[in-house]
Image (cartoon, rainbow, N blue to C red; front, top):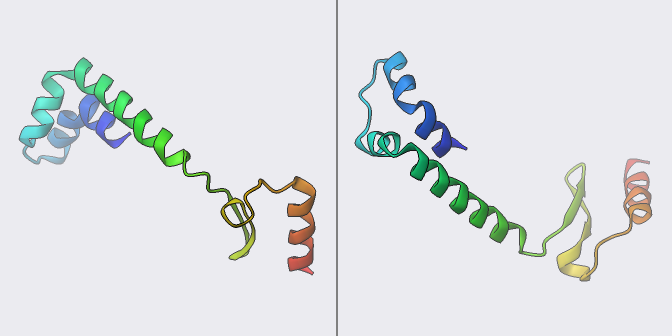
Length: 89
């Protein structure tokens, strides 16, 4: 999102802040469509790979309630609620 914001309004923000526009930001701004599309493609690639870890952990008040990495299965909602009730009482 930050790169996309730099592509769309980076030069305007630099002008308002009265700071010189970096060269890389000028390059992004001169090719707005290409920069926006590449940001979208790489952003989706990175977020998809980050989600493919298989990690799913539930914490309550800093304590681990359930971990898919350790059990190998997603917890059922009733198990999560029971663990939260047990921790809070």
